[in-house]
Length: 482
View (spheres, rainbow, N blue to C red):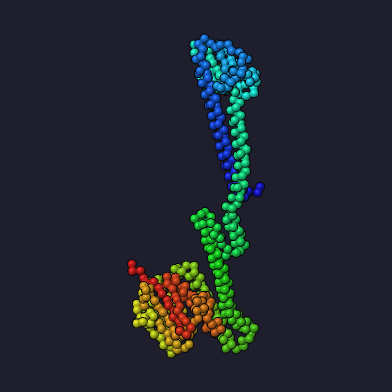
């Protein structure tokens, strides 16, 4: 069975509560009106019986109901008691008076009259012909052992209550219909923001992640809070999807680059092996050349594989790849100067403090010396590979701002901002056309350097501009004094 909408359910609930409230109010009002009518009737009956019980000490005088009805009926109507009965000590009727407008068959029967208590308590009696109910009060007479009983029909009171109940039912039904119709339109207007949220959610489900819930209500309301929460969630979802798309794009590029880098040495090895298998290597010198090519490409392949493995390990558990010991970056700075001079003896290399100011200063760190040596080697090799021979290089070391610093700065051509922002990306090479040495320049050196620095809690930064050289800066936290 199809479930009702929220609007219909709220309307049914409201209409049900309204119906219950109207019914309860109608019942209370009719009960109070009936009680008021009966109290008035009971007061008149008690007053008359109290008065009549003290009139005669010898018993009731004989009065004919047919004698002078034009006088008797108004008198009985004045007291609101159209029926007056005397009962003797044995409960037998000693006399009675009733209005001439009453049918004798409609009067309460003798057996019913005898059940009325003589203490002034009002009770209901059935009409003799079953046409309605009577209200009766009895009191003992003074001076003789009888009882005087006054009774009046409840026709007027019952008619009033019935009319009130009919009016309440009709007016309540009309009010219920009107309020239900008004509630339908009011709920439709009140739920309009939820429908707009529903449309927004449907658009997002169709792929439009830029959609947001409009400002449907003041921020302090429930709808306002809901819209704000949904917009926050949608912003996070959009960022998550964008990050996932970017991650997938980077992964595809990474796999493509890895495939290319692995394929090149593998093809070289396979080509040399094919030449040997086909007998194209006729002389021992040809075989030696092929073996050297195979060894060179295998070395390159092994170095690339080791770099990829190291990056994967640093991504998964960077701290687990380190064997920390106390050391000073000045040791690495001095070794880097010797390495640069060995690579290019004509290149001027100076050793200074950070920023080129003063002499080298102490830079104590708690780090893995072998891994940091790998970082500095990559920075030095990058400076040697991407600057013309003889380009001056400065190596600065010391402490700045509470951190140990080691800089490798060159006076080469520098890099534009677009290239500088990507030099730490894996497999990124500024010049993809240059001839690479075996096992080197696969575009992983700077990526490995940054990953190793971050594993130590530090960072590798680049400051460069076209024509102003490049400065790679390694910063690491100082050891804890404790």
